[in-house]
Amino acid sequence: MNFELTKEQTMIKKMVRDFAQEVIQPRAIEIDKEAKFPVDIFEQMGELGLLGIPFSEKYGGSGGDTISYALAVEEIGRVCGSTGLSYAAAVSLGASPIYYFGTEAQKEEFLMPLAEGKALGSFGLTEPNAGSDASGTKTTAVEDGDDYIINGEKCFITNASFAKTIIATAVTGKNDKGKNIISAIIVPTDTKGVKITSNYDKMGVRGSDTAEIVLDHVRVPKKNLLGDPQKGFNQFLYTLDGGRISIGALGLGIAQASLDKALAYAKERTQFGKPISSFQAIQFKLADMSMEVELARNMVHKAAWLKDNNKPFSKEAAYGKLYATETAFRSANQAIQIHGGYGYMREYEVERYLRDAKLLEIGEGTSEIQRMVIARQLGC
Amino acid sequence: MNIYVLLKKTFDTEEKIAVSGGVIEDDGAEFIINPYDEYAVEEAINQRDAHGGEVTVVTVGDEDSEKQLRTALAMGADKAVLINTEDDLEDGDQFTTAKVLEAFFADKEADLILAGNVAIDEASGQVGPRLASSLGISYVTTVTSLKIDGETVNIEKDVEGDVEIIETSLPLLVTCQQGLNDPRYPSLPGIMKAKKKPLEELEIDDLDLDEDDVEAKTRTTDIFLPPEKEAGRVLEGDVQDQVKELISLLKNEAKVL
Image 1 (cartoon, rainbow over the protein chains, first blue to last red):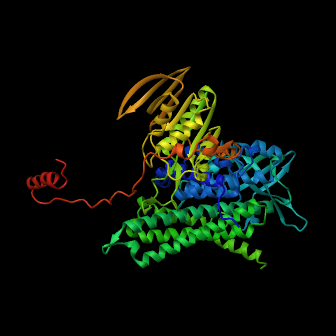
Image 2: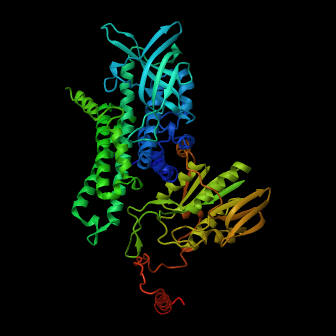
């Protein structure tokens, strides 16, 4: 067994940390306050090759592994949850499905610009009436000659306003048992009939774009169908499993940031003539936070390692996502408590961590869905 | 153009540094490329891109220095050389390092050698000038601009906040000052490519040097942290009296007047 990162992984972590500290951190408060998606930061991340970490060089990627990608998400999430979420969604949801299930032609046309960081992609699964129950998808894609005509509505779609392509899920027919077949179709956002609006006023991850999509008689060629027309649903499950590792990594970043801020503050803040870090009430909080952060890291990295080694990782990805995101919420909450009144102020950043962390317990499968996934793996 | 960069691995001084028994504790310390050497790496890459040639990064260090060399390769350097003195030398100083480098450069034809202005750990700023002197080439320290046109080199040099403009020629050694450029982040493809770039490891034996040839000229007798900053004192009372008290304190206590 070896818990050590490789040289490349260490270098990637260091590079992303430096970039996050120097370029993103100074703007983190503004990104949250103005709820403005930092397009220029994504351009720089694209140039550094961050948007293509887990994809092979053949498709414009960097040829890194899932662990490296998780390290990058953690380091970005550590300074800015909004940027971290948009990053994780762009790679895991916008680009990964094409990498894993796309045809050669689809990869060249749609994946390359995403992996090279020249464009962003989105994944349109959630609908007003299909959230945790993705099988309740109402959007339809009807064959018409060489095309599909897509009609429906998607909501809470990350990055959609800035996306070049959306992978939209839609009902394409019924199987032998009369159940809906749900497939994924690549929809370029400049196609006629695609309307994207971003009017949400969110609690957290405010600088990450979230949009509604209306698909009104959107005509796309049949060759844009992604992967197996019958097994579309299983593909989303694989995509979501992978996405969970990155959301776990994002939670880990927020949890680590909460611990860092709380520890620094506790050593500095004096009450009753002593730094508050000398009081057991505070020490116990910090000890718990530190332990949970490390446990979350081990789980997220293990899930990433399993994926890199082509082993089943569904259960571990769910463990990682569930534990790391709940750790993020608890750590952020304790960080505010340790900061007292100051922690309630935007300037001290820990209140933002809590607002950002809350989303992670909901997006890409709620905590409850993670528990269902785990229970299913247990044979329940 | 044959471009060489002298690179040193240093403590990350942004992290906490612990000293015990007159030695800096290695455990838990973070190591980085000396920040001034990062300017040198960046400049070397830019000069190569403008004039062609090859960038070789050289360090005198230990096994762990490979990490910093790989980072320089990931930034865009072509080759790296690690002169590992870990097993052969107890303590070295600037003389040692310059002597080792002199032996390394004996059979090289370097057009341009770049180094950091100082290393942030010991801040002597000696290795570059010592090396240039023993190789018999010109050197300019603390450069903030470097323009090469054929054999002619135009340099802007920082002199305590003022700028000195110098014209010289290749071959040349310069030490790099803040303001020269903005070092790039190693890109992801760069990091992945760095794995495959050549990194040669040498020991002083390979340079036909004996331990005695490079024995340090200085001895470090103690290392200690600066005293902790004490809380300031706020004078009270009438402004007139405060001024008088301040003057007297500056004279008698601080002895700066």
